[in-house]
Image 1 (cartoon, helix red, strand yellow):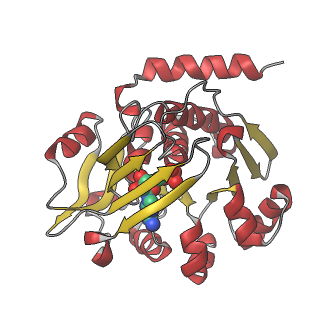
Image 2 (cartoon, rainbow, N blue to C red):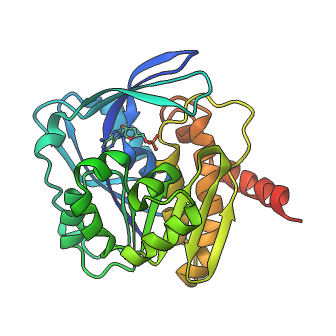
Amino acid sequence: MSVLIVGSTALDSIKTPKAENPRLLGGSASHAAVAASFFAPVRLVGIVGSDFPKRYLQLYRKHGIDLAGLQIADGKTFHWAGEYEVNMNNRRTLKTELGVFETFQPELPASYRQTPFVLLANIAPALQHHVLDQMRRPKFVIADTMDLWLNIALADLLRLLKRVDALVLNDSEARQLTKEDNVIVAARKIHKLGPRFVIVKKGEHGSILSGPGGLFLCPAYPLAKVVDPTGAGDSFVGGLIGYLASAKGGIEKNLRPAMIHGSVVASFCCEGFGLAKTTKTTRAQVQQRVAELERMTGS
Ligand code: AMP
């Protein structure tokens, strides 16, 4: 089954202690779409400006990503710049230039409206609503968010939580949303706000699923060297929903292996700048790491 992904489609300028790379293909939807494309057909909804390099459009196409929902507008592509500290867990946003995102209204092609799996990747909650308004009874909707929207668009986000099956957020965002230090208690509070499934990401320490079947602890694939973690969270949730769309059976049963697959795709993301490593990774390499991760965690 297909996956519809809406989110940011960006040019990212990324600085780490070791290197600096300007204007890479980035954005929450780009990372998530490439990750999901390992497992399922992907439809991308976003906007880029006239400065968006053609080679990046070709890269999406190489991954079989359907671009009928990608608007190309006069103006500049969304540009984000960030800098990592030595330990790579701490990141500072240096620049956020909205460009064509400022006036973006996601309009879904008619052929997209019945897509069964929907990922509302990180983007303003009002735009996430606008996409859902155009969908016809999707089978499963997962939303991602970030601290910015908790700060400036909380009311929209709270309304969105009533409309989604799952929310994925990192531990500090879960604490901010619920004013609760303990992430298990925070997840319980988030269930009360709407989503049946809550996934709390803890970076290199993996993620926790809370759902009707209880808790599931998903490890991160252990990496000896991280080159650039930008987009790891988006790759995780993209891989997760791509796997769900490809798997037979119920969501509840498939969510656990879906998180493992998401975790493995995220590990490839961290091994290169931007999408450099993920776009060179094969499905066979993903499967190999999934098997390794299962061996490492089985008792
Ligand atoms: P992550 O490392 O998972 O937090 O995601 C990083 C990606 O988020 C980058 O590729 C950025 O282009 C994108 N991003 C940064 N700020 C925003 C924002 N305000 N809205 C949407 N996407 C953003």
